[in-house]
Length: 197
Image 1 (cartoon, rainbow, N blue to C red):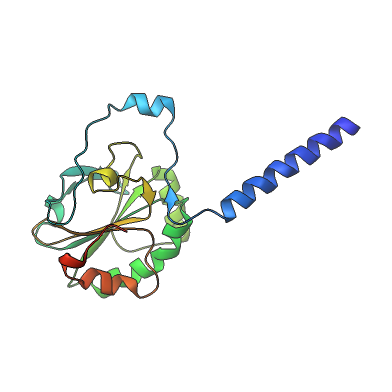
Image 2: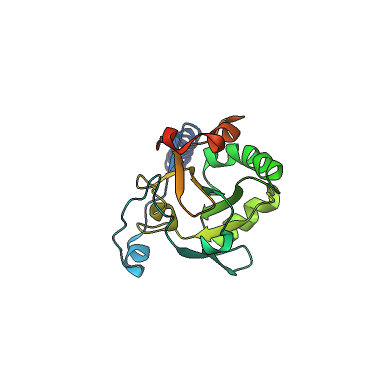
């Protein structure tokens, strides 16, 4: 009987520690570590960091229907606000209503918002079933050479946003969540004010 009680106490303590760690997660959220199997499945390529003034790198990612979306060609001639997020990232989820409002306001003019989920397709579809957004979402597997890293997210933290002009040049990069009302001002600041935060 005593052994059973110790098992219950041990499990309860572990659950409490896990909940405490989750509730106190710092902002921005780190990406999960790659497993040995996933790291060996993908060769690591050298990524040159990009910044304001650089051309956006080219890459192709599937949308929610599994259809490839070619960046930046698919959005040529239109500014982009690419927001890198994940369904498990609390700061990402908190900023999504702001991104959705910004996307709706600028549907006809201004930057096209694109969500780049570093997640599994099933997790993204489940999440969007509860919290729908009406801007394009593409999916990428997290890793040392994923699209987020190609866009300058060398720290591997989320959320991460990149503003790209209509000519395909990176204007700004932002590490961390947008606060209420912040996106509009950030997306209209001159490129000279852009810094990775």
